[in-house]
Image 1 (cartoon, one colour):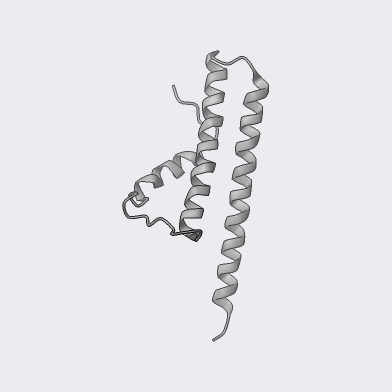
Image 2 (cartoon, rainbow, N blue to C red):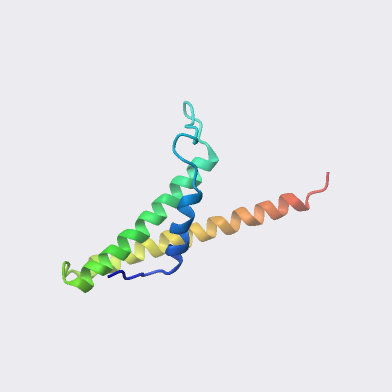
Length: 104
């Protein structure tokens, strides 16, 4: 039995097939941070938190877990992370549009 807290997660999980394999991702050298890798790590964290929230809901519904407070906390943490991710995405899109409007 699968309970989906957020149906949009299924769409995110479908995109995992499009991710490059770990061999093709170049690791940053020294203290440099690759923007693509930083974004990917953030997406992975948000996805993990959504999965944990889903699992805690399933555990609560199946009776494996009795503490509703921890379930609410997991769901709230996942919700805040997702909202932050959407906000960052919106800022990036806004910056891209502003860059495209610049005249050369």
